[in-house]
Length: 461
Image 1 (cartoon, helix red, strand yellow):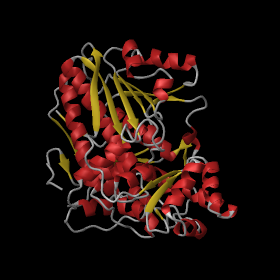
Image 2: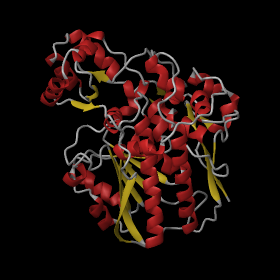
Image 3: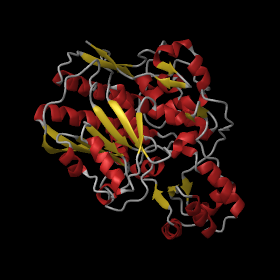
């Protein structure tokens, strides 16, 4: 990696530790600890993830400063740090570690799987019935299938996935072609681990939508006074909305009737999931049934006073609902319409499930059961939105901006051309709750129902 620019990007930022490189940051800020859960010991990630994420945060901050200037707010620059990027990457795990007590053993283990002919691959199934059909077809006993699901389903939250030996043996004794046939027949997503990394995709693509008036004047932060309407689930989209809120935007979150089901997933922090709070705290919430004509009409009415619409719906959903970019531009000329998808258009109109670990496999990102692509995808989506807002300010035209987990994975690969050689000089964090209590991290963290990273940016006038 190239040297950091200390006026905008440092190693430690507000963390009061002598951090001098990627290894120090991964060790001190919990990345080695969380990534290492699957290995049974703290383990370095296979790429300079904290540094690449810190560079992305610095670039977002720089574009946000330009947006602020275009809106009449005289800012000199934004500062951030690699340590703050690392804390953002472990935000959900940090929140869970400091929430209400919850039994969540982190036993080692997890995919990728390996076939009888030596092909490594990842599986994805969001439905327990799909999971059951796949393994039953391979002859695995129901009790082992059920035990495997209890570990596989929460792996996005725990960063580990110990699987029964029967499952590992079933794939290890079956050739990859047969496994792919079984996956197709049972509705399971199977993606081979790539031999070479995908590293040639643009992080996002923005195209003009239509004419617009000037953005309103800014307040204290670059996006103050702007409204973001968000309809997102899981990590990538909600994190993008969270970052836009940290830049000053008012974020209005659209959830289904009864609220997002992830609100109730333990461990809890008050009346809400700690992990959910890590991505969605401070957002306004409206419950709307987008499956109805009335609900879709209500979203368009809300968009008529918004500046950004952000969603991560499944492929084709926007067209079926008549909620595409042009539909929003008709009710709100100048709106920035942002779609954060799994695969973009790289795999055609009917791609497989586009979740973190299968995208990691397809793109050749060094394997981790941390949500490294989801988190970086949130950064890339936010970067696309602020870039689109700047283009709107400069050209007087709305923008449609597309990003994906695959484009984020490609950017990760492209920016990790060489690993930081600086040796580790600080102890390795092995307890996120202890990190949260450490006074040396106090200025980088916020405390409410549990502990969260503070804003990753400081804006200098």
